[in-house]
Image 1: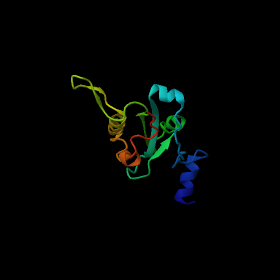
Image 2: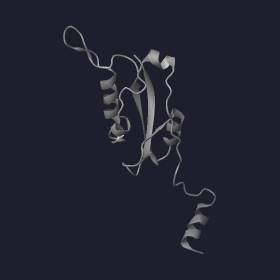
Image 3: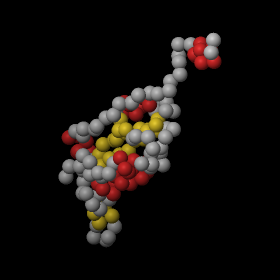
Image 4: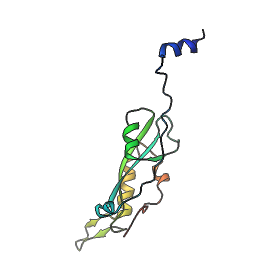
Length: 130
């Protein structure tokens, strides 16, 4: 009996999980999301390779893979409505950051976990509706 056969015998029927396939997902904002002004987006990347492909996933998939160590998964709040650019009040203070700045900030907040997310999300106005 080889070492590999001995190892498989020790594992029994459980086996070793070397991958958990994930399914890509494209969000489709609904009218209620536009009334709220944002959607939640979820992304995953293999945890052992920061250059591996980034995949957008559903919230169900996010919850499922959150229990494994095979992927880094993040969630972010993505603005889809509001002014595109910053709005200042008459005193010169920001009254609304705008969609572009809000989405750029959301990406930066999670960039420690998935550094190349800015490359995956170049369109900061994706799903935007005025």
